[in-house]
Image (cartoon, rainbow, N blue to C red; front, side, top):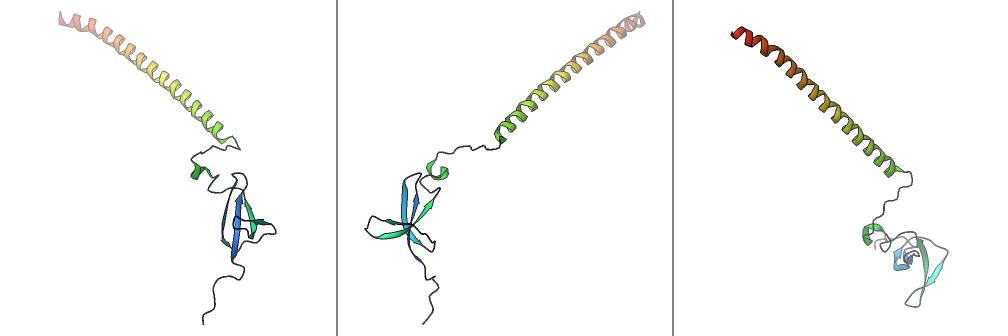
Length: 120
């Protein structure tokens, strides 16, 4: 006869998410000193969890941005700084274009009288 591959301490355990007031019974090898009386009247080892499918943002659809190090604020500040720099550079380029047009107009004005005299 084949030897069983399941560990000897594989038993029913209750996992409880106390924040969401949600618990479920499943089989596990997790150890615990606490016990709880389940709905069927029997006592099972209790494993407390911080998060479960009842409280996880992916399953509940309530995603939250947890920004403990100010990363979102730094990103927004960099984006605002970049937008201001783009606007400033845009103003410089439009000024340069206007100055180039003025120079071209002056040069054209200078060459027009010379061309009129040559035509006479």
